[in-house]
Picture 1 (tube, helix red, strand yellow):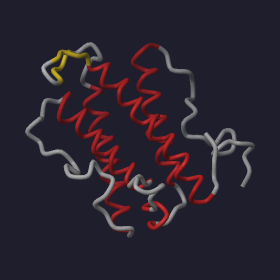
Picture 2 (cartoon, one colour):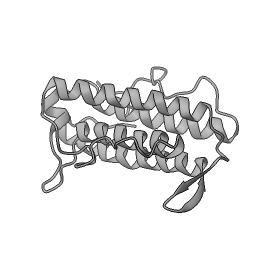
Picture 3 (tube, one colour):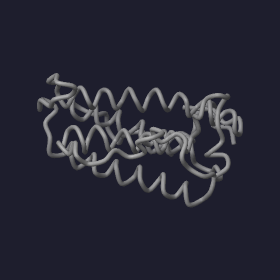
Length: 175
């Protein structure tokens, strides 16, 4: 399977938009969606043991941990902070999503369904909230756009980790 350095053959990449995004909102949301998809793609075709395989000790980083962590981050920023549900308990409060799971299919199914659920909830929050909306974070007023940019940055950083984790598992590299 050689796609000339690409993860998928040309024309089959779900991250390729039908047309270029126009404007700030579409551009930011396009980047966010592309990184969400990239994380899922980096996990495709792996079994539970491979998804749960830790990186270099003492790190607890794994692909499955990244999926759980991103569900936690989506939940925190979009549902707790932007939607104002700070009384809602955080997901994975003790391990940020990286540690408390087994290397089994039930954990994999739970992690991916949790991420899908949180992403869908996040999309609904963003569909009804302007990027200009002010929210309070640590006693400071910021705009929703700051959170969206932070989420793009969070996914980008962790997709870089996912690249390295995947390469260690089966040698697969690519965009």
